[in-house]
Image 1 (cartoon, rainbow, N blue to C red):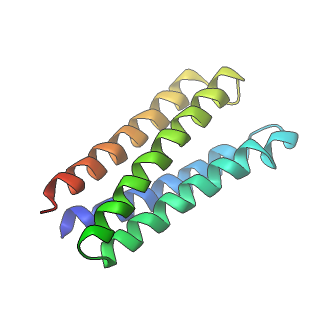
Image 2: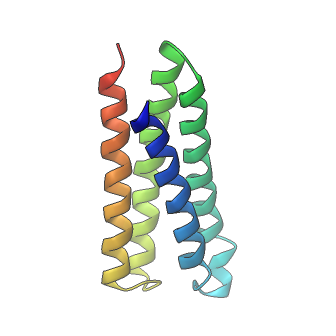
Image 3: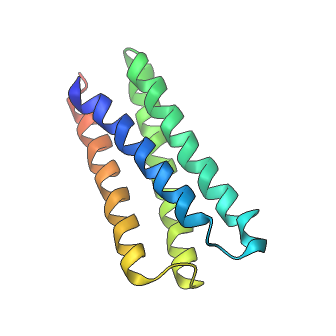
Length: 113
């Protein structure tokens, strides 16, 4: 139970951090890439909340959808780094947080019957 609530907290904190990061994107990209990334992270949080309150196969389906969202987000983060929207230190921090979410999600999936 603790792992499940922890992933919710970590995703929420990741969303807060990324909103701050995306505020520094070029103006024209705030409404394109930043908006898409914020929606992906919000969708990820929604999926984790839904999984938390789901049972049976619905829970696993939600968590597998979350895996896809994390992978999509990885590509957007990489694109932003390559476009110079943030430096390598910030990129490393973001990737580390995303890796941790992926590990936690994978652990949750493995813990299911």
